[in-house]
Length: 326
Image 1: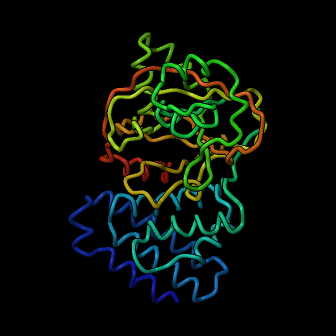
Image 2: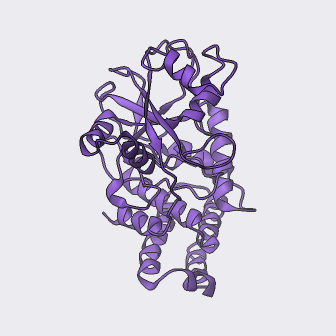
């Protein structure tokens, strides 16, 4: 079995890989690689499964894309941090296909296993339920798209009417809250938002900063990314549903150009990576399962108009390495 390790390790030095990343980054990446291979080797997998997982890790490296290396490093962070449901990870790795794109294959395997076992949030680190007050950020167009019909609104173009009629009031009549691809909802503590209002007097600056910090795309729902209004869903306090620090099994790996990064800490929170690539703008984030048929008194509030900005992945992998090393 060990004969496979130096063979895979040798292939990492291919010219394609060397030309794309600098020497220091490659050295750090090899440390991550050795960590992952040691983990597979020391695990009680059957030989056939070990070979498949090693081939998959090899493909992540040889793909040499930002997404594939981001996934490899985040896996190492979660394993090092013990912030991952290992039995569920085993199920996902057993479901993996070694053909095709290794990142999308991982995302597809998560979706299959999550639906099969009806398990969604998978991080291990949490703190006392109901301790913090939370909010969720989204564009006004996402709110209209997902909740207009539940609010009895059939002309979803009249945004101002919706805000006047439904914002600042309990939204307990919404019985199913929209979630991500994996049945996960991402939230942050309200203190993070309050600190922005203390820093900026202009609500539009707050909206722009928050979009950046949360990695939200200011999307109109029409496929065009333009300036749009950012809103928040303020959570009731205490919020009694189980919440946890996110891990790689909670995010969507089927879509490309993501900016999720795992985080090595034990405070029950992950940290965002900003769309602008400014690491000082990382804020706390947690996840919880989708909400169905619960009369929670969520309240929608408008924040302001967010300016357009593009995703900057320039420092994404370096930040991932920093999170693994620290």
